[in-house]
Length: 258
Image 1 (cartoon, one colour):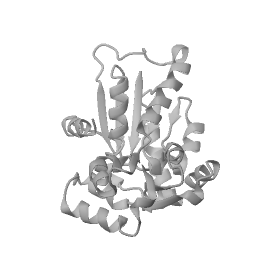
Image 2 (cartoon, rainbow, N blue to C red):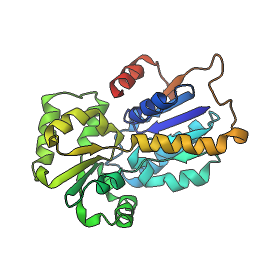
Image 3 (cartoon, rainbow, N blue to C red):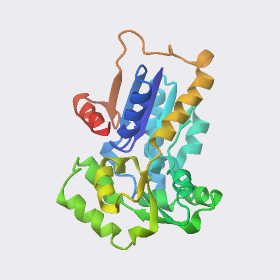
Image 4 (cartoon, rainbow, N blue to C red):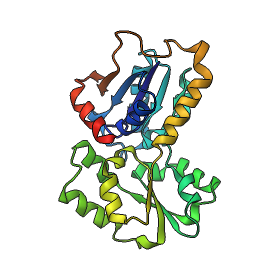
């Protein structure tokens, strides 16, 4: 099967890595809109236009499914994407539910981009889970910039994390939700910062589980391609804002994600 992953940049590679771990024998496409990253501080209308343009490009690759591996893009236009295409479109949302389930009387922090935090999708999710009063939101836009620069371990990153978290009493929290796929590159640094008593939670496993469960239900008679990758098919193709890229730098990033 041919499955595409879209993100504003390299963050969605963390989701692709999980898909490859679970089911490696598919043909995967990855689209990084790195020429226009980061999305988190852009107007929603601009993000929508970028996502639709990329999704139209990917649809031309005869997909069996599209994963919007970007919380910001999901929050802006996932409903429109599902109406636009006949193949399954799976989005990302902050993994608030498992965080609240383990929270007991403690608090939950959702780290995400400014735009994700501003959009109604997250607020509606918290309301459905009765978690609005128990949850704090923290914009961490610079982590996207650091990731796109591939500045994963540096004093500058450490200072930024310290500054952003300095206004919170971390002992009050049971979980921190990583509500942006870029943030997962900084999991170790964040865990060190918040301490072992705070659990870091992301939505990657849940998203990939949903993807394959949905395809299991729908692909047998409707798939445009064989279930497994055909002989001679590339296991991975990567596009940067519509231009196909050499694989080596992205394979190195995928190794970092595992």
